[in-house]
Image (cartoon, rainbow, N blue to C red; front, side, top):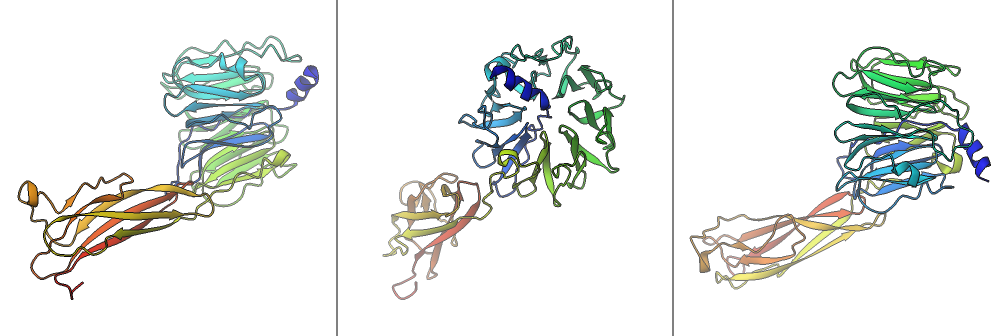
Length: 420
């Protein structure tokens, strides 16, 4: 069983852990920090910073732990993420305890996973890599992946038996490990993004030009012309995000690997023979081989909830200048993702507050806490002259996907019994 598993694993490749981006949607809904692995993918929900994974879960790689997270990274058969609170890393899936030994003791900035090795960047740019895992029965010998180059780095990526990283000081590339096809022999220049595939590598220069090197049996080394921001390499296909936020893919296309959908995207990540992207509205799109449902990502609720608010009492009478306790009933309804709570945005009056000191004239609006779920406070039953007074209370309700809607309720102080 163990030897057979190892043989199956050799077939797959390492993919770029492209989950460090933190783009979010204006609605507060959807996903960020997308990362595609061998036959599974993970992303972080914008609304509550929890993890969502889908696709193959044969080794627990798509069963993330609970909690709130900053970034997520996937490998062929395992996944890792950094916690939101302290950026400490945790891993799950195949042999995750071994890989966790090579994570920084302090805050982790980025993680890249090959088939049988892992590299991590600490918050200060320090680079750590393992050699091939001792559980690999058929790994090639003599590839010193743990002999990382000196210096400080801002990004790292892992291929099958090679890795590359971008230096912090000059944005140049450093690559090491297997170099049979020159996949670890990068061109000179400065780079903004780099991604290692099976036996090739691609990078986006700071001037947005795209370069690929190494093996190219499936035309992986032949990117389309244009201006790009990020690149993500799979087994034998590559996808990149253009500066106009559309996605271009090239290379092997046996299962629609390069059939990127149209539209505006903020992230892209490539798995073994599939890819996924985060659209500008926070929703997910995946294409390519649909092994274990990996191209069927979780849906995004972009419909705002129905929010209602009603004050009681809604009329303050008699007009005696006293503070009256007012309670607002706020209801949030959402059939898709469920209600997520509410906050008080404002309490205002259309008449000037004539407060002059303590006691009776300490203020007409009291004991309301803006920015909290506060439904109770005091309003003064007082008007200026013979004009009707209106107090307006505004609340914002959320659903569990992070969508929001506002509601207002009015409390009236009549000038007399006949003018409300």
